[in-house]
Image (tube, rainbow, N blue to C red; front, side):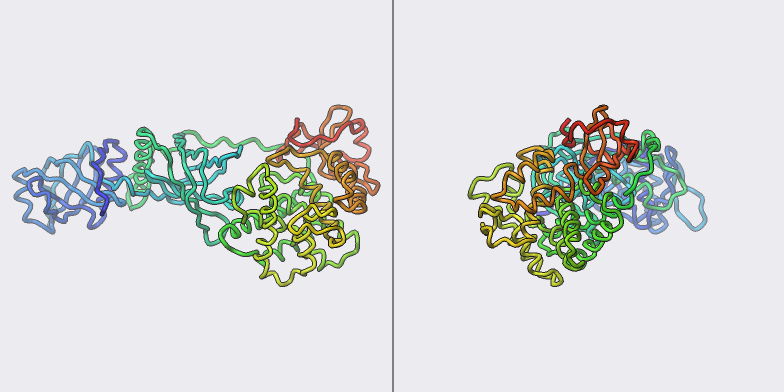
Length: 562
């Protein structure tokens, strides 16, 4: 059954009335109805709208109506404006106009209008220049996801998120909160859930359909007001008019955006590295989304971004090692995959492996954990797993390998080692196959060490990030699980205090380690005032003799722990 039109909404805002009336000025936009015969519309033209003064109506197409209008038979105008039915009150005739070969009347300007929508199902679409920020607060997350409003209705909305934000939504799920932020300062927080996802053609953004939950009477009233205001703002610029109209209060920027002062900073190495590393992260973001939506690993893109990572390593090793250790804002799977790829490539090149083999190692490392998003949500988001869940968790390896079938250029032994066996342990306690030591090859042993070092250095739902000395003690004390020679080689290669570590000097100064010499001694640091990773906090770069004034290294600090 067709949904009934709700009771009309009375519009008495002068600017909104003006905008709606101008919408009736389009050819075929207006009809005249006499109150005594509301079911018989007559086609007329609304020739002019003089704000607060008069309307000019042309009835040349139906001149027989002139007599009734002169006799003051009550009449009104109605018509469609942006999907809504608009109706004026009864109009008062001022005079018949003397226009050659036309039949026109001027009428008193109406003080209000009635607007009729199918409220429950009507969606107000926003143009690209109507920017309304939306905050999505998924359950269990601290930072909201920021997107833009694409449409709005009483029951929900469509939100567009860039891929870097969209990748954090697993699929249909409950939100703690959804917040609409309009340019005019109006803010509305709603309960909501994500119902469906659809990608845009370029995969750089996705649109999420969100359903409102537990809508109160006041929230429904405000939502309907916002729907109407969006339509009014669209109508304001959707047709030709010589009159400058006031924007809707929702979209009238109250004050110009405050521009932050330029940040004075020392020119630091690696700025270009960080920007280009962001391209690799963006690729992995979109790849994660494609996997969730049933897609496979993109062979061509994986090859190109593996080459990019190797070129960055050749260009500035220290800057890249620093960047992968301190690359906030990306999902853990993405950060971990990039860091693993870079460190494995660095170790593999030091062992003299050919470039094509190193590239296959990088590619496998980049995607090795992405199959986790194909697991049931309760598995890949759980903070603790029982024995049965741990066994089921290992299925992510096989799920990913099914999506790698199109990557024919990847050597099977590399896939087996870096993806298939990176989570195996020498004592047979690993997964997915619980392979004992004699079934684990050299590359898999190396990869397992690099994997656990990076994983332990990042926070997890069940524990905070661990310090590098704690990680090294764990490695050296777990010879039954990790190859002791590769553990020692890793420590010698990357140093006791690796590039990217946060250290505190005896002077009290905090600094990021930016470069080591061949003996593993610190030769360059970047000063910082905070133990939290902040790309805007780019302190001075000190090197060699300048370090003496800082004193000795007193401790290695876990970022964010202070």
